[in-house]
Image 1 (cartoon, rainbow, N blue to C red):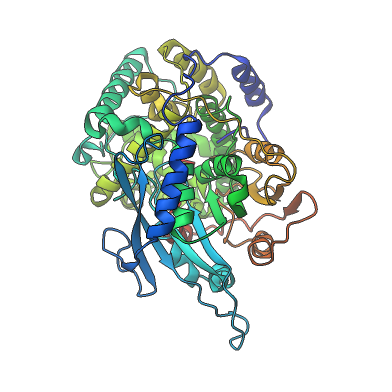
Image 2 (cartoon, rainbow, N blue to C red):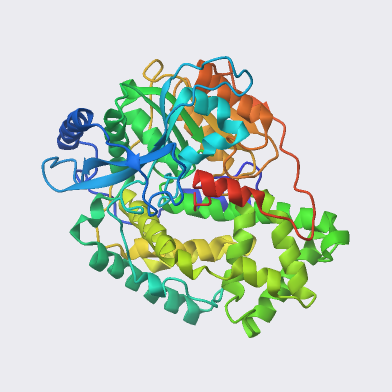
Length: 552
C-alpha cells in the first residue's frame, strides 16, 4: 500500500510533502501489549512447544470453513494464546485447512514427486481468510507446487471462526445507496467523523477487552505456532499483500525458523509508513491505476462508447455518478456503490471489461449489468462485516495514528486535489483509528542482516495500486539477501500463479528447487484484457479460491 513507481509529477511532489509532515498522533508506548519483549518471546516458546506436542487433528471441513470442500481438503484447529505475554491464560482457536501433496508430476505421470513439507499461505487484508487456498492445487499453474507441498490455508485471529471480531450488527453493515463525494462538504465530513467515532466504540463494545491483541505482531507469532503444529522445523510461507507485512515481521522475529518465503505484492514495511502514510500513498497510486483503466476504455471506444479520450471517459463516469446521486439504480446502487465496484478494477485488470460494459450499458439505458455488479450481497454481509472489523482492529492497533481530525482533513484535502478517485473513501475507511479505544504499538523496524535469513523471493507488479511498487523496493532493501522479481508495466494486485509464465517460472524455481535469480529480475507484462461487452470475471473465480480481493 505504498508509494507508486510511476506517479504524476504533481502527485509525486505532494507525497513528498506529506511524507515530511508529522502525522500528528501520539507516539506508541513501549511495552504496549503486542510489542516485542521478553514476556511475549517466552510465551511464544510455550505456545510452540504445546502446539508441536498436540499437532492438528484434521478431519472433514464444515460448510462454515470450506463450503463443498472436496474429500482431499481437510480442516482442523490450532490453539494460540490471546496474549502471548500470558500463554497460560485465555486461548483462542484458529481454523486451518490442508490438501496433502499429490506427489503427481503433471508433466510425467510415472514420476513420483517427493514431498517438501507444508506451504502456508495468507492472502492479506488484514481480515481475509486463506481457508480456500488448498483448492488452488487443482489449477494448472499450481499443480507442480501442489505435487511437492501440502497446501495449507488458515483463518488468522479474528477472521471467520478464528475467535471472530465484530464492530457492528452485520444486518446494518451494507448501507445502500450511499454517497461518495470526491470533495466532501464540511457537513458531510462531520457526518463521517461521527460515524467513525461510533464504529470505534462498536468495536470495543462488541469485541471486548481482548481487542488490543488483534495485531500484526501476534499474527506473526501465530504463524510460528502453526508451523510447529504442522510438525515443520522451518516454515515455507507465501504471503500476499498485507500477508507480506507480517511475513516480514516473522522473518525479522524468527529468522532461523524460515525455510523459504514468498512475498507477493509486498507492502512497505517502513515503520514510518505503518499505516497512516501508507494509506495516503495508496490513494495516490489508485489515481494512476484509474488513469490506466481510462486509457484502456478510450482505446476501445468502438466497444464501450464511453469516449475516445481518457478525459471523455472521466466525463462519462462523472455523468453516471451524478445520475446515481439523483436516482439510485435498482434502488441500491448510488455513487458509493459505483465507486466501490470500479475500485476493484484498480486491483485486477481482468475486471476492466465487465466494469466498462456495465458503465456503458447504464449510460445507454440499461442499468441491469451495473446493478448486478454493484449491489451489495446481503448473503455475504456477515463475512464482509467481520473482514472490516479485523482490518480496522489490526491497522489501528499496529501503530500510532493522528488523533486530531484537522490532520486528516489537511492531508486528504491536499491529496484529493490531484488524486480524487479513492482518497476520501480510503480516509473514511481508516478514520476509526483516530478514535481507537485500545493502546497503540510502535511498529517493529523490520531488518535482517546478511546470512540471518535464507533468500526471500519478492514479487511485485510495477503499477500495483493496492501495494505500490516502492514498498517492494523497500522490502528488498530491508531483507538482506532477498531477490525482487518485477512484472513490468503491469498493475494487477497479486502476481503469483496468474497468467504470467515468466513470474510463475521464478516462483516454481524457488519453491521447488530453492533457486533465486542472481539479482533483480523482471518479466514482461501480462496481456491486456480483451475488450468485450459481456466479459466474464475469470479473475474473480481464481481469487475466490485464493482468498484475495482484500484491501491490501
